[in-house]
Length: 116
Image (cartoon, rainbow, N blue to C red; front, side, top):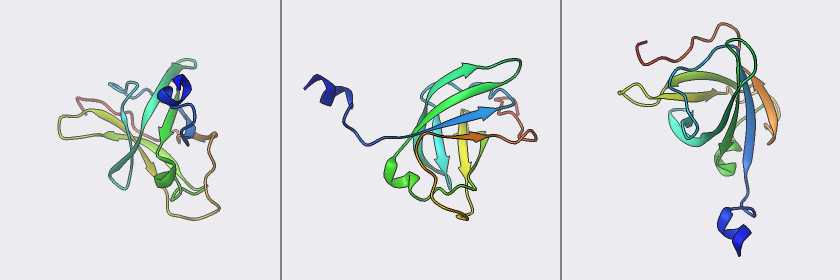
């Protein structure tokens, strides 16, 4: 019963995202979006060297089924108040993305910032 209450048996879809920039204001619980709709949240953030971070994101497994291996991640604003979020972009090319894979943000991705 304890494990059921903690979600141990829930179907999960996790991804690791490595970013070469820091998303200002990004925190655990931040939204992960796909086509503008929230499909998950940031579970964990970890610094991995100067100006780099590793994020673990948890997605709704049914929504994550639309993601393919061409999926890219970028920082975006969650709403008009400037809350930081992660957006996944995919054109649908390639085989389906599997859980527990790693995405690397391209070096030209701009950091999310409240002032920006």
